[in-house]
Image (cartoon, rainbow, N blue to C red; front, top):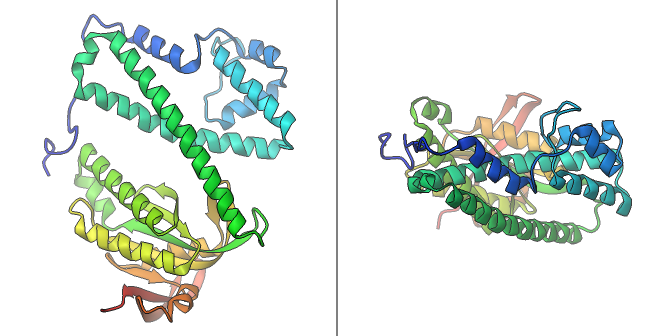
Length: 342
């Protein structure tokens, strides 16, 4: 693929000299933040009645840069949001540790969302450079996208919350936040480092978007959940070994058929897992990660618990491999997973 072949490759949109970019950004910012910046940190503290240190900690937990006391940096929207924080602590038994954990996760999640959505706006402008001739059209575009995406985010959040509560209800015998038994898998793009050395930014973006899209569809199809993507790697979980095995097999097969993707390496382990703030932790997660590092491109390795669970399932073929010594685990037993021959 040449540089000009990739989506949006090496394209720029020149800003007309008659456009006041600073004023345009100010207009967009005012709409996004619920008004102009009009308060200092001390003034906002006085308005909402919170302790100065508490406001500072919440602001940093959300991922925003620190500001001086006399900087006019806050809007009426900030006042409303911080007031909601006070209402939250008054309405529910939320202690300081939980509150700061919540704000930290919100900050990390929406920072990534904002970067992606901002890139969408820039791509739209690059695709329609005539928008730059009319700042008003750009403002209208951003306002329209904010309204639609905001509604979608609220819908997806509610759906995801309902799905989480449903999963908890299906495992009602275990305490929330305690260890739960599930299968954990890592899917890793083989040869990714060498690809990045020669790929253009557009080619790299296309590869990662294809990988994330493929992973999301296949994991959801088999009742699993994508926990997170870490560069060239996807971490997923499933509540049954069979579902996790089908996810792994479908991922490897789909990547082989997709000319945009290199082969995948997948490691899957099953056992006790601690869930916290949407992430997963524990020895099972570590074993899955180590198995992935042992894989050859296009292969799947599973641990003993997975092998025991799949041994009598006619859909799968398992082949025992010699134990491997990896970081944290001596003589880690592993099996290669394949589809059973028809």
